[in-house]
Amino acid sequence: MLHRITKASTPRSYEITPEPMYLNRRQFIASASATIGLGPYSKALAAPKGFQFGPDFNTDVVDGYEQLGENESVTFPTSFFSYNNFNEFGPDKRDPINLSSGFISRPWEIMIDGLCAKPCVLDVDDFVRPYTFESRVYRLRCTETWSMVIPWVGISLAEVVKRFEPLGSCKFIRFETVMRPTEMPNQNTSALPWPYVEALRLDEALNPLSLLAVGAYGQSLLNQNGPPIRLVVPWKYGFKSIKSIVRITFTAEQPRTAWNTQIPSEYGFWANVNPTVDHPRWSQATERRIGDFIRRKTLMFNGYLDEVAHMYEGMDLQKHF
Ligand SMILES: Nc1nc2c(c(=O)[nH]1)N[C@H]1C(S)=C(S)[C@@H](COP(=O)(O)O)O[C@H]1N2
Ligand SMILES: [Mo]
Image (tube, rainbow, N blue to C red; front, side, top):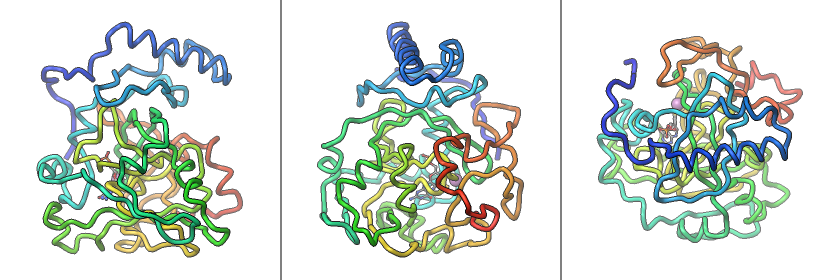
């Protein structure tokens, strides 16, 4: 089914950008562009259509706008909150919003275990407490060939990984979603090998782009988006960005992951966005940005080539898809 935004109902506060906020953001972009040499002010200005930070987060840092092209803008929040993949609730795009109202994401414990010096169990609020929340605008590209541009709020995964001190033998980080069949109806089926698992190689987890998100559009994640904390890996297909994490494990071996285990020919472990490697049943060369009518070309590594290509030098990306 094609999803499109039809009538905008009464806009919520976070859909409106009052002039002061807009000016602040412009000023920020201008100064960021100047300090780190990110190109002309005018280009940065043209890229985003603004959003306002909502009531939950008052972040000072907005990062990622400079990586958007002139024909890209932040996705309308209604799409982000209503058009989702969260298979624990069901296979359809509307299942997560329609079937997740009974999902309880507080209190919430996260277990950190495996090959690290500081294994522990932490309440999510203690888990995030040492960090400053950052806002980062990232493209998210689903294997189904739709994409969005999302202003996340979260913490650097690299900082989290370093805090628990991985041992020299640690090569991968494994993430596990909560197992709660009473709240997540589709976990009572064998649609996927539950609980949902994803993993990154250690250097991928340490890449500055990798984010553990707690919010988006300035507000806490709603149930359909994987609260209270979920991964965001913007150069990989959306299924790597695992939701509602309860366990982070440091491992020597490459972990078995949910989609890769279920359908290995269609969903590789690496899952780097790559327009030259088609899904067995469809092309990955183009995508439809939600809100657009015309498809656009998919970019290598989802447009984050400069930040991530070095990690895959010498790797056959046709084979290791
Ligand atoms: N636990 C869990 N995480 C998941 C999924 C899922 O089914 N279960 N779906 C993935 C897929 S396929 C995508 S495209 C993104 C969608 O994230 P969003 O709904 O917040 O946009 O979540 C990913 N994370
Ligand atoms: Mo996806």
